[in-house]
Amino acid sequence: MALRNIVKIDKDKCNGCGRCVNACAEGAIQMIDGEAKLVSEIYCDGLGACLDCCPVDAITIEQREAAEFDEEATKRYLEELARNKAAYEKQAPKKPEGFVCPGSRIMNLDVEQKDDADKSGDVSSQLGQWPVQLTLVSPMAPYFAGADLMLVADCVPFAMGDFHAKLLKGNAIAVACPKLDDTGAYVQKIADILATAKPKSLTVVHMEVPCCNGLRFMAEKAITQSGSDLTIKDITINLHGEVM
Image (cartoon, rainbow, N blue to C red; front, side, top):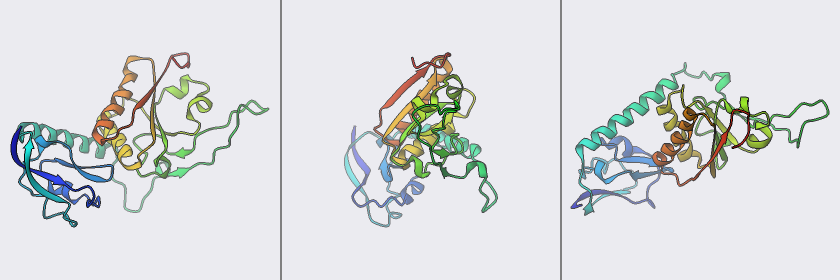
């Protein structure tokens, strides 16, 4: 620790405009839960390039005991941010202006509440939203706001015959494969959902096979990245479709 200049952000003044994030060349300031926050002292050089961009004067420079600026760590951090951004953009290619893919259009679905199968043997769907695939969902979708969020490995509904009644009912959902999909982009997307929608709970549902545990690791990293204080509820499904 050393006595040095470092950024101070007044959370009571911050209006969440995000201009300081773009002004900080070291990436030390990020938007978390709608507020600008200093993510680590070692990324802040204390020069104050972000001061003039704040429209509400929420940022000042103070002199205090702080970890020293680490140029090498900052370089690695910026490279990771760039990789995550590139992966995210790759997963979400630009569409023609004004075009909305029908498969990606945000929809709340009417769910018919039934306790069990009807007389014909049919079981009603408990899916309350569209889309469900993690690449396609939007962090700003209304069904995520304050919801019980369930992150589900895409093999689970095939293995578990009563998935809708036992697990899906009443939850918002995002589906992904931690082995075959781009996990870097997914971590960023989950972090964006947590920071923007502020769900009240997070459940991860995955298969018992080792590679599927990656879904929990993605969720844990996203929690750290977003600054969320959620605790993960972990549910493992065996190959016979039973909760372990």
